Length: 124
Image: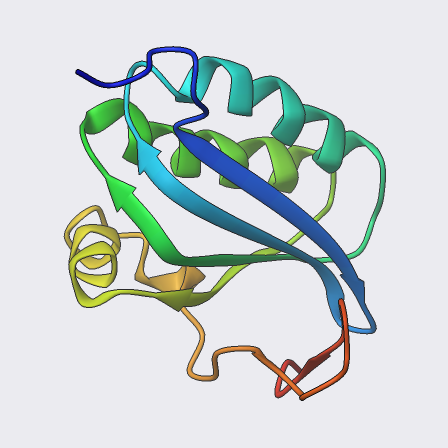
């Protein structure tokens, strides 16, 4: 039996010269998006630089998970912020393409240099 009190999704926020990197890990589904939504609203409202989403460690479990990404994009656009998916697994990329959100995908994924905590290379 699983522990229902354990976090389903984690969000890590790092400043970068190209924007704010948001690294998500876990399962995005109806159970996890409500709490995450409030945090993402704060992140969008707190700045003007682009949001760089690292979805490599995310499993989009249902429509509400994909809906959260759509909502983030719309909210950021209303606040004058760009959103770019800089890393995602093949399944998430296919979902974004099928949802006609392929414009969010970027060619280069961010990567951490050894010893650089919170600093990325390869994001332009």
